[in-house]
Amino acid sequence: MLGLVSALERLKVGFIGCGGIASAHAERLKGVKEVHMVAFADAAEDRAKLFSSEYGGRPYKDWREMLDKENLNIVYICLPPFAHTDEVMVAAEKGIHVFIEKPIALDMDLAKQMVRAVEKSGVKSQVGYNCRFGYAVEETKRLIQNGEAGDAGLFLGLYWCHFMRWDWWKDRSKSGGQVVEQSTHVYDIARYLCGEVDVVYGQMNRKFWNDSPDITIEDLSSATFKFKSGALGAITATLWGAYGQWWLRWHLVTKNYTIESRDTNTLTLYSTSPPQKTVTVYEERDAYLLEAKDLVKAILEDKSTRTPIEEGAKTLEFTLAAVKSMETGKPAVLPLG
Image 1 (cartoon, rainbow, N blue to C red):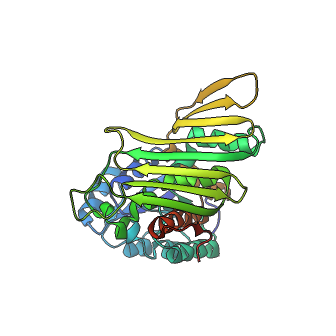
Image 2: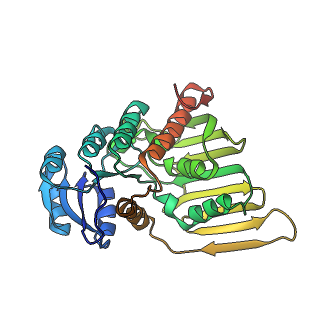
Image 3: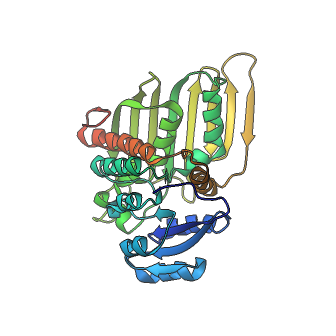
């Protein structure tokens, strides 16, 4: 039976998957006084042992055994997309709150199972769309919600990097490709700020990363789309961007501002009416830390998180629709059938 956890009691956290992204989360959690990392599971048991030696707690090879033996309050699911099976469902049935990295799945059937399990159990959930906690996105959301920005009309986003992983990531059947696994962050920002999408049309290609026959993902993509509000949007992505740089940038045209975000925590507002006025605002933030604290607060205060699992499912559907259009050459209508 679920209940509120006393603020004096540290929430017990376990990890499923002990790779690079798990390390990013564990490094933040070790400084959150309300939690205590007690267990780590990874099919490569040496990695679980390494995390245990670094952060304390017990190592496991089998995550099911970990969930059976440990009295966890939160489980962090940090697996590659293709490895997601029933972790969310098993955890939710046991009353364990869930953090899951994006994308939550590679198909909507599994995503919907996850959403149903979380809703049925009443556990809290958070999906790793950490950009929602960046100052640029949060401040823009506030300006839209309080009416200062006025209606949103046009969103333009890009995710440009010079990058290739030589493991499961280069295989579309395992990662979903750049749109689904990586530039999904920009697709999520578009949804978060402007609402749901009606229709999307896209194109993709692989033009530069052709030195290995094992690469099956796109290195170029573009998508245009229409929101239910009538606003329009476009997102481009590439794996052949400027070497050594990582561009996650977006612009938003609203009634009263043209808004520019060149990094997670910097926002520039341009007035759309005279007199001409430009204001740049900035706040240093650790978005990974903030999304962790948001989940902890939701559990202790019985509130919703900023990115519950149903939000992860909606952004997944948006990216899957974009890929469907890119593959068929025809517009894709949401929701997907």
